[in-house]
Image 1 (cartoon, rainbow, N blue to C red):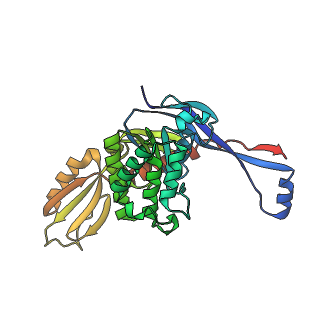
Image 2: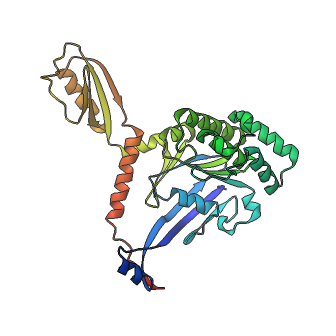
Length: 341
């Protein structure tokens, strides 16, 4: 039985359309115009126990809204969802003790106090036995190499150090399900790598079910075998990372290493040219024409090396997002509602 089950989940917001100007503002006191915003549009998803799933999408795609629904922070407009058999928005204590939510742009630690004080507060909130709390705390601080920072006020920590403390606070009660919303946002490359390695090792050892949102492809590639792409509130893809390129990219990138004697001034430029950096030339070829094009190219140029590769993952996903946005733009917008104050 899946540990997370979502069926036709929807969430829409009624947003007040404020008009410019003093007279328009006064009219708005008595006669307001609203716009319906569909943040999540009929999401269906099943996640098995122990899976590490990436939830990928552009800003405003519905990723964070979905995580908030699954963690019970907000209620849906319609649809159903269960996590470990619980309906999240019922906010049962039995459920809240079994999951954790970490948001990269939100702090759960007391800013002016040392992290250890916030950890002790979590111990009392979750009613953790002292021996269990200390064992878990010591294990996590050792894994993240922050034990020496426990007595330092949170405001004095670097962004990467604060995120490590946020993760520790979320994991002190050993949740069975972990929702991570942009945990490496704003971090430098070194801090990102350390967080990635920690999450990878922790998930492998504990078999915790993790749903991760991130804009960083390196996070996704390093951690997740399964990727769910959401755009404009709808799931556009659910499968492996490599499958995204196979399904959504119709091209290959061909790089030729030409002979040093090649005259690049008079060189016949191939169709789909991407760049020329002597002695290399790079161009784009439709997947089903690679063999034919390479045959023609080898007759034209003195080639010393050939590389055929897929387009960058970021490029393919960005193309998916643009296509999804265009499809949404072609659909008539929901009408404005009106309401008197």
